[in-house]
Length: 315
Image (cartoon, rainbow, N blue to C red; front, side, top):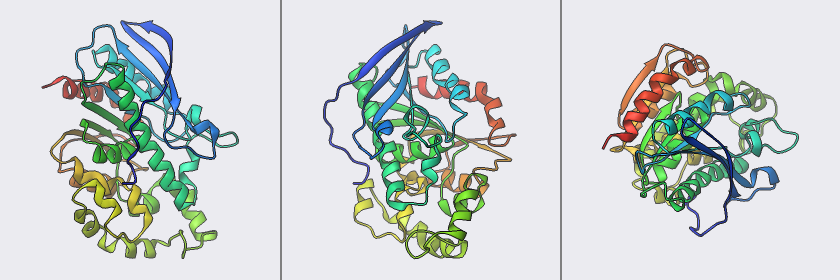
């Protein structure tokens, strides 16, 4: 299966940074199980927050959003989860922040008009999440079960990871969505990519028009529901390769697990249809609408944290 990996031991460099409010912070680095032509992205880098007295053996893996400005406000979450007794690991996604190749901007590579590379980028992201859980288990912080929180693009990667790895028992998804038909053609974040499709793309190879994309997605839900297990990803024919990394493809595998979802009423990045379809395919879990747009949703961080802590600590 596309998101499988050979489970093997690996060496981890773990450097102590500081202790504050009973939480020890470490920088973690190890070689990614997926290697790329970009050296900077070939190591998994993350920040581990360990409470002095953990209240659970279900640690949290936290995934940030796309771009170059959200790490500072979002690192608040794993620290605060740890202060509440939950060991937390903030994983830097490939091609973001410290893992950004020279000459690129953080997160921009994910929007490149190159289907094979995009598939590999998502594959690396998901496998890095899975191996980070192996690391947390090896550290003695997990009994074998995990929670995951993803914000925006991190929520999209997180939905795939949770769909293919049943060790993730609890999920918190904030301003995330699925179905690239809407994200590609309606989101403010993909306007440059749309322009590239119109001006440069060979539509027979990768690029689309909105009409072609709509036609490709005509039987998308039939494809999704024909996947009975993640392993079917390698066996069931698909209309377009983007189906292989669309969070919506994997959302129904999450049904039955504990999920809380947050959507923004005025989100200009994640279209409402995109958020709604992800929620539907997850089995309509607990959901909260935020009176905010994509950026101002951060103003609800305290209530999101409070609900997340309760979700993870409850039996």
